[in-house]
Image 1 (cartoon, rainbow, N blue to C red):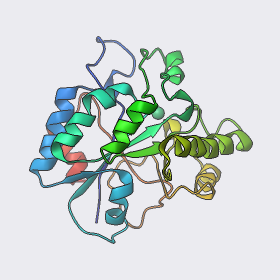
Image 2 (cartoon, protein in one colour):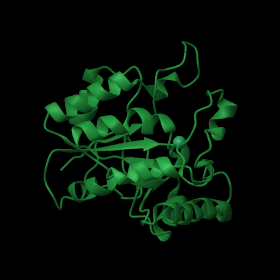
Image 3 (cartoon, helix red, strand yellow):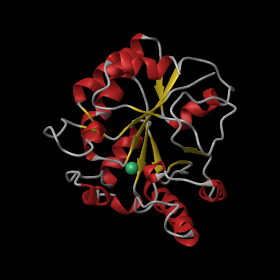
Length: 233
Ligand SMILES: [Zn+2]
């Protein structure tokens, strides 16, 4: 069956008009409305790990995978309580060298400072049944840094996050969606079961599990846009 994999970044009040990448902020109220709508339509919101049996066709049911990139504190503050309210789980892809740090990689693009979750907040995230995935060590373009460094970004982030969570980390998200056949095989060799790519449609069993399609949910998405992403393509 087809499963929408939804991607969020920051769940926070968007910055003033004209700020770069403003579309990557979804307000707490919009996020709550979207989760409410999923529930209303009979969807179960699940982490990518829990959604995989549905994507692979081993289980059937109306499921949406909920994912966040970058591990921001505002997801802990504004999304975690909503997920718990609706009985949903989600995956957050953390930048392993920025646990308790911030979005340093965004700064050259002019994006405002945003804090990343620390280990205590990650514990809360896990305690609610959510998944910790890897978004590399430093959020670099993996196809542009040479094979050895790309492998280190993929492998060492897994080790670091497994140390923190004391759980296997089996899901990966490519920073900037940037990947290639060789980067994908590094991810597979590192022991990840699944990674998300940049195609925009729902995921299904025939898809390459190292490049699953994913829908970015943007600030300007109306409930109708949201619905089309979950139900149609
Ligand atoms: Zn990212």
